[in-house]
Length: 129
Image (cartoon, rainbow, N blue to C red; front, side, top):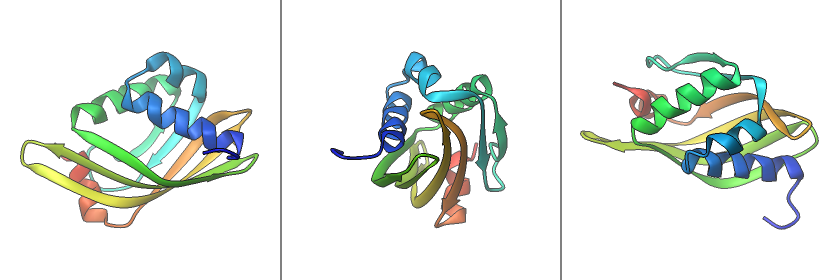
C-alpha cells in the first residue's frame, strides 16, 4: 500500500470500516450526498442516495453474508478504481464474482460509485433474498 494515492488509501479504509461495521469511520470517509449505482435485477439494485441510506443498505448487505477482497486499488485526485472479488456465503448460497468499481472522490470523501460485475447471475445471487 505504500506510495498509494490518498484516495486509494481512503477507499481501503472505507472497505475496512465496512468489514468491521465501523459506522463512525464510514461517516468520515463517505460524503453525506453519496450516490451508489448498484446494477442488477435483485431487490437491492438501484441508486442508493445519501450516507444514511447507504449505511442502512450496507447493514442489510452484511446480514446477507456479503464479503469482499481487493485485488488492486488505483487512484488519482478525482477517481479510484478497485478490482475486487465480491461474494456471499449464507445458508444455501456460496457465490462470488470479480467486480470493477469506479469511484468519484471529493476532498478525500467517496462521492459516487459504479459497480461492474463480471458474472451478472452471480451478482444477483449475492443480493437475493
